[in-house]
Every structure is written in C-alpha cells, then in structure tokens.
Length: 329
Image (cartoon, rainbow, N blue to C red; front, side, top):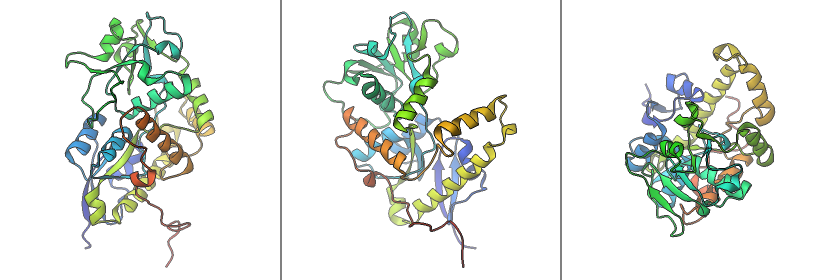
C-alpha cells in the first residue's frame, strides 16, 4: 500500500469542508488530520504564532502581516470564510449617530484591530462613506494575532483584561464598535445599542452590485517547509477543497436539509445576486481584485510596510487550461 503524507489541517466546521472532515474527499497522496473544534482567533494564533498545524485557515489580514514580516508561510487561494460586514457596525443609540460621517472623531471599539473583519470595515467606511480610520480613537480587547508597529498618528489603546467593548458600548464609554460577530447587547435587545446601518442587507447588496466584492475573510495557509519539501501538496489540497465545496453546494440545493421555512427562496435570491458560486476559489478576476484591495487597505492602515504582489502571497495552483477536467488513459 502506497504511503501517504500525513498533514494536520485546522479549519472551521463548515458545510463546504464536510466531505474533507468526514473523509469522503481525500487529497491525492495526503492523509489529513482535520481539526475543527477551535474558535477562529485561537486557530489563527496557534498557526501563525506557534506553527501548530501544517495547514491552517487563517485571517487574511493577519496572514498579510505575517508575510510582510517574513514569516515562513505560503497561501493557497482557498477562501473558506466570506461575509458582508455592514451589519456588524454597531453604535450607542444615545450618541446621535445617524450616518457614517457622524463617526468621525468617535471612540471606536474592536475585538482586535488586525482581524479581516476590522480591515474590511475600516476600508469600507473610509472609501465608501468618507470616514477616515485615522479620524477615530481605537480601543481593542485582544492581543493581535501578529504584533505590528502602528503608525505614530494611529491612536490605539489596549483595554484591560476585565474590560469588554460590548459592555463599554452599552454603557456609553464607547461611541461605536466594529465586531466580527453579533454582539450580546444587540442580540439581547438592549435599546442603548443599534446598528449603524439598520438596512444593512440593502447596503450590502448595493455594495456588491457596485463593487462585485463578497468580502474574503480567511485564506488557507501552509507552512513553507511543507511547500519546499513537497511542492505537489498545495495543488492537491486546492483540488480537494474544491471537490468538497462542490459536493456541499450540490447537497445544499435540497431545502429539506435546512430547518428554515423560506430557505429555498433565500438560496435563489443569493444566486440571483451573487451567482452560482459565491465561494469561488482560485485567482479569478473577482478574487484578485478584492485581494489587491485588501493589500491596499492593510498598507494604508499601517499594518504592512509595502503593497505585497499577489504572486508573492499565493502559490500558483494552475495546471494549464482544460487539464484535470476529464480522466483519460
């Protein structure tokens, strides 16, 4: 029996990776140990700081910082997590904030400054709504996945361990919060907290129609020594992730597997707006465009020293046109 290369792979527990987790899809020549129980921030820290895994789903923003600092990782153009972010900008409702430009000069809380969610939200506020990120004072909760030296004109304060940006927003100590998740005061119906964009879905759909961007949050990182020792591994992993996603999308067409009354209608609406494969992998025109924008945002916001070319960040997984679609002897 041929011996397979054993690799550890830390990823989120998503439908689009179910086939890899369950072993229905296996990368050619590779035996994957798939780890899915970590929260995102822990996984990013352990992969980028400790090198705990051979392959890891990581914050795109932190990956850019790691590469800018010369850390030994490479990227595979597989994007397991995307999310529109207009609905994750929260305000204290007593502060008179009615439009984005009211945030200029505010005290803004974040879970951590560096995360991809924050990178996108700051960039969108600045370039779509005229709110410069340097016009605000920033307060962060977590240690950054990768430490960086902020520019001297960027005001960032790290909160004490017993402080929470969610509680500080509700109490009025902060004016607004950008957060990767729905915050507890909003979920619990606290009237002191609301969304910057109450009509966030309409804003997100308009943003997509205008920009063709469905924001990439995470990329697949791989330790450079794996690439150096086994240069065939990245492309085999890429194809396995694509196959797993394809199986998931076929399965998700069936409305019976999801306990939502209008699931099929939501699926059709998504297809109408975003097309048949919003989670497309590879260096497609849309993906290249938004990755260049992310690199530009990261440089503009003081996290990387230069705008890194995409061919330095991602391994080329091309095998030429029309190859691999059909097996022939």
